[in-house]
Image (cartoon, rainbow, N blue to C red; front, side, top):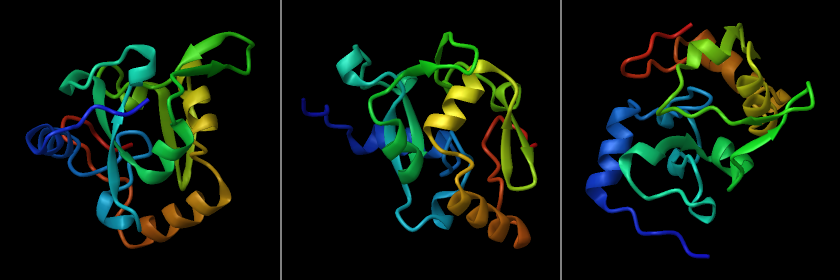
Length: 145
């Protein structure tokens, strides 16, 4: 299945709304080798539309691990949807503890696990960015934890 074309105006809106930072792990696009990509929160194959309310800015690693998934089974054995940057507040599902992104809900837990927020490489990257004051990126309308 091919993806719907996302025009420059819509890309600009999504990027500016996110402050040019990943809306999942909160790394700034300037601090990643591959930058950020436009992500369908609900993938097109699951009926998600290519419109501002269903698009988020995602770093390449978060987008790669998320793929077209929209949910997973939580540690408690229940199906839990992923964090939705258009509907959810980051601080309600995640807590930044140094370079570790801890979770406080089933939504946070499945998102962090599937998107591999706390892999060793990603923590090393965050430590380096914290040391130079570049992490977490401030997202417009959100307060960094």
